[in-house]
Length: 222
Image 1 (cartoon, rainbow, N blue to C red):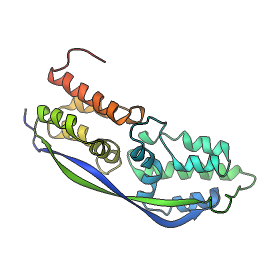
Image 2: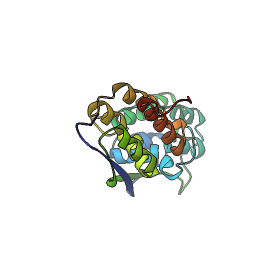
Image 3: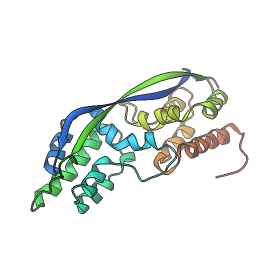
Image 4: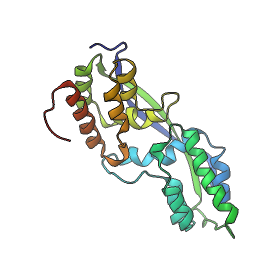
């Protein structure tokens, strides 16, 4: 079956810049979180995955790390670390969850701890660039071929970055499979995967397995 539109595999490059803002305590952290661009929210919740693509940590969160290790506000740090970044379909909703948690904590906090000099939280932002690769897919066979050949950066772009791009709210693979190829069940299976529990290569293998299973090219395995 041919797709309505060809899927173009795109890799991702990023440019990190300072916003010029820094927070010395929880109150300032919350205030600036409400002001910074979405690119800053993205950077501080996803840059670890970009830099350490072969590790499988819990969903990384710079805010939780700073609050725990610099301010030593362990309870608040645990609350921020517990925020499940994979459950959000937009950066704005993620921002609201983070600031809401901090503001609720501040209502009962007896005093504010201040970061030592030079250890303030510096807000950065990540500007993303999606660049087309040589690989395209018009059917499941070509899609499978592309999955086997594209770079880690390409997978990251279509799985992690894509989920937070409005108005899609899902990874690019699932969106194309469902919308352009009519592969609703396969799209749903891929979208249900928790990408944070795999290495990037492990995630590639899992998606390939699902596609092979649908194509009749896989006889065994989970």
